[in-house]
Image (cartoon, rainbow over all chains, first blue to last red; front, side, top):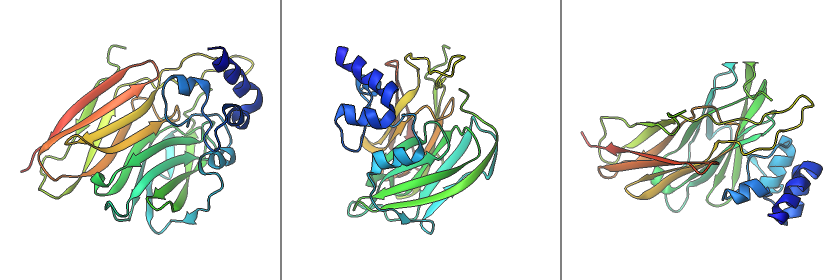
Length: 167
Length: 110
């Protein structure tokens, strides 16, 4: 585990970008712990939202998908510890063209990239929902990747009266 | 603590063939968040939270979630699936302490 320890300390020293470089991956940094636990893609890094989006999507162009993506979040969340978020994409789900993955991103969270859902055409409808934590009032974005690689995004502001991320 | 991994799955009861149905599931899990000491430094330990959720219907994958600590305690998820035949929906959760929890619910046609 000597190598892993080096990478872990590199993570602490240089931050997420340093870790991505140290592990030698291009767009997806895999910290030692996530790797040890067999997580396919490191999501839970403490980073700024810009760094996170750059790491995951590598500067690929994103189209405004506000017309297609229905992002359902309460506009005011009294308790940031449990905020129900659901994302519905008005797009076909056939083997030829389907929504491949949906990311949920909260800009001001310490861990901004909250969750990634990978869908298959079996779903019949591009819909996912989850309960998330929000640390403070923030924009919440949904980023949708279609099977042809197109990225669509939509965002909405959520006012949080009591933060839910603690330390 | 003994409740960790208890899963509830809700499927609609009145389903017809070809319907797109929405399934909700909830798991009892602490989803520990990063703790910091007085200096604001992150305490380095193996926090117990769910990293991956997979759902299958009739043995075929429908959806997989990759999660972080930004997901709430006792997380609830929902997803859609196209009901083609009566059969089980199986949901599996994996956490960072090696815990693996699964539950099934049956889709039955009315």
